Structures are given as structure tokens and as C-alpha cells.
Image (cartoon, rainbow over all chains, first blue to last red; front, side, top):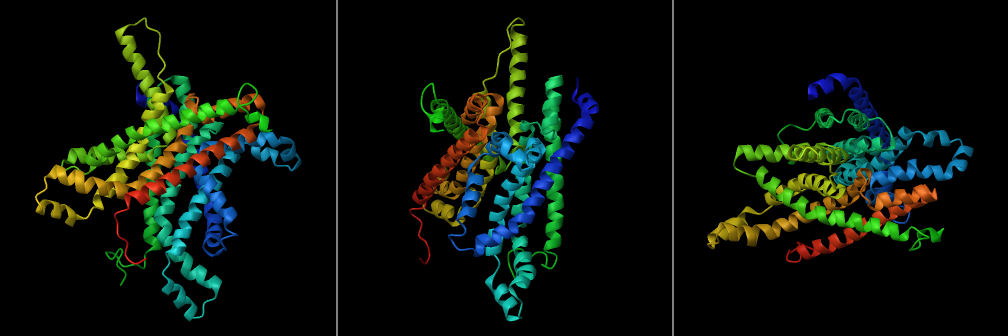
Length: 235
Length: 237
């Protein structure tokens, strides 16, 4: 079969897989985005001793393959089946989608926390002193001064992290989630037609390209008060 | 529980250690190939010829945008199919051969490593101080001398942190080859899980081993960086 016939016959499955990939990545990144600001504040302001568990968690996530983390949660939960059933959690861990989402969210949280920590530490101290000088409280300073600046600094790096997460989401296919990679492997095992891998590659690249474009638009909106052509040099 | 990990027939210690050896071998074999691809692609991307630049940028964009597991399957299945169709053309009766998963792993991981390494190496060349090259020219050094004595030692210094990160990423990505049936640490763990029915214990041990590998790598890389920077004067301190 020629590549276009493969696409014409199997595009609904590929589309289905693409939507699953976007769903997994989007939800995982979103959960991480909701949790990471708090952890980042803890990383910046917490005492060295209180940070120990957080540092261990981040080091563990960064030092182990996502595939191993996925197996640890998906297959590993089986070892505690009676306990999890008792707690009413077994139905959650039985579903590969939930396990994959959990692993991706926990994983991305660790990376996003470190990125945001860098962003928060990159906020000019003069800005924070100015906020204090005009009488802003701690919470107001965080909301109006620290986080807007921190996100502007961290934005490109968070974008990179989401792309890495999107690529990592292909691993969900190993625990039988039918994402784009899962559908691709399914079609290949049926047709033994190599071109389906090339279609998958094209779709993955399109997702990345679309995301990069959206992320740049958002970045421009975040920095809309910064005059153009003065990147780097502050007036 | 500790007897699960003893050496010999009773425990899984020796199987897991053998898997670990395959993982380390795979990573160490991938490194030179990845660095070679990285340098070639970096030079292509920095070339004066537009066609070469296009190839360089195209390669890095493509390989960095694809999931590693997809690259691995493309190499494993694609090269396998190619080999077999070539074989059929030579002798139609020959039995189909299997492409070695180890070779597929080295090639696929090397291609990915190379794409990221090319960006790191290109950045390192861009970070070189132009004045030093001019100084080299001024004292009458040849272009090759400038490359070997001024550029390369400093590119090494600038590129080392980035390449170190890539090494750690690649070490973790080796776990993917377990999917194409190479008996690495991950697959040895899977086999042990199949027999003992203790998935959490064994996958946790596998995670801890990978973690230890990464921490050891970080330690060695920090020492290498200190050595690479030994001639650099720091302001203040």
C-alpha cells in the first residue's frame, strides 16, 4: 500500500490517538502547573531541613527513567491490591490512563517546580523592595509582583518542559493506553506497513509546531508592556 | 525479602546485575556515536553552505521533536525491514534475519543524543571569545592550530555541562530498549517480577539503581567540570 492509502484508511484511529496524546499531555501539564507554584515557594523560602523531602522527590524523579516510574505505579500498585481495594483506590490504579496521567503529572511537577524556582529567584530584589515600600503585604506582593515576573522569566523553559512531557507521553502506549504512539503500533502490527510510523512522526512534529506557536503568542501577551527591540537591556 | 536479591539460583541479584551491565554497556557504546553525530551535525549547521545548514537544522529540529520511543521503533522496525528486503533480493530463499536490538538501541539513542549534542556544541563554539582567535592569527598560528589549541579545549569547557545533562538523559532513555526485547536492567526486572509477583519491590529497586547511576554520573561530571575549568580565573571570591 502506498503511504496515502494507509492514511486514508486509518486516519480516524490516528486522530483518536492524537486527541489522547493531547489530553494526556495537557492534563498532566495542567495538574503540574497547579501544584508547582506552591512547591517552588517552598523551595525558595523553606528552611534547608524542611526542604529535604522536596529535594529528594525532585532528585528521584530526575534520576529515574519515566518508563520505570510508570511501571512502578502501574504494575507496582498490584502488589498492594488488597490494601488499595480497602481504601477504594484500586479502580483508579487499575486503569492505565489514570496511572500514566498520575506519573506524568508527578514528573512534570518536579521539573516545573525547579524551573519556577529559578524564575522566582530571578525576580529583581528592587521590585520586591518597591512593593514593600508602597505597602503591599506578602500575599499581594507574590500575586502582583513576584509571580508575574517569575512566570515571564520561566515561560520559555516551561514550554520546553511541556514539549518534553508530550514526547514522554508516548510511553503510555507501553501500558496499553491508545495514544498516538499506541494507535501507531496497533496499525503497524496489523499492516506491517512502515509508513504509519512516518505519519506518526509528521503528526508529532505538527503538535510540537502548533504548541510552539501558541506558546510564543502567550509569551508576547505576558510581556506586552515590555517595549519591543529592547530584549535584555532594561531601560 | 532480602533473599530475593541474593546472588545465584535462589535470588535475582545476578540477573539484575547482568541487566545493569547491559544498560551501562549500551550507554557507553552510544556515547561515542552520539558525540560523532553531534559534531558532524553541529559543523553542518555552522557551515557556509546553505544546503549543509539546512541539513543540520532540519536534523536537529526533527530528532528533537520526535518521541525517543518512536525513533527507536522506526530504527528497529525500519532497518529490520530494509535488511530483510535487501536479503530477499540477494537470495530469495533465505530465512528472515532479526536486527539486533542492541544495535538498534545504540543507533536510535545515538541519533537522539547527536541531535541535542549538536545544539550544545554549536552553542559552545558561539561562546568562544573572538579575540582569542584573532590573537592566534596575530601570533601566526595556522587555522588547524587555532582549532586544536584554542577552540577545541574551550569548546570542551563550554559544552561539558550541557553534554553531562544529555548523558544523564540518555542513560535514562536506555530503559526504552527493554520494549524491543533487549535484556537490560529494566527487562531483567520485568522477568523477575513475572516470577516473584512482587512488582513494586523490584521496580523500586530498578528505580533506585538508575537513581544511583545518575547520582554517580553527576558526581563524576562535577569533577570533570572542575578539571576542565582549572585554568579559569574567577572574579571576586
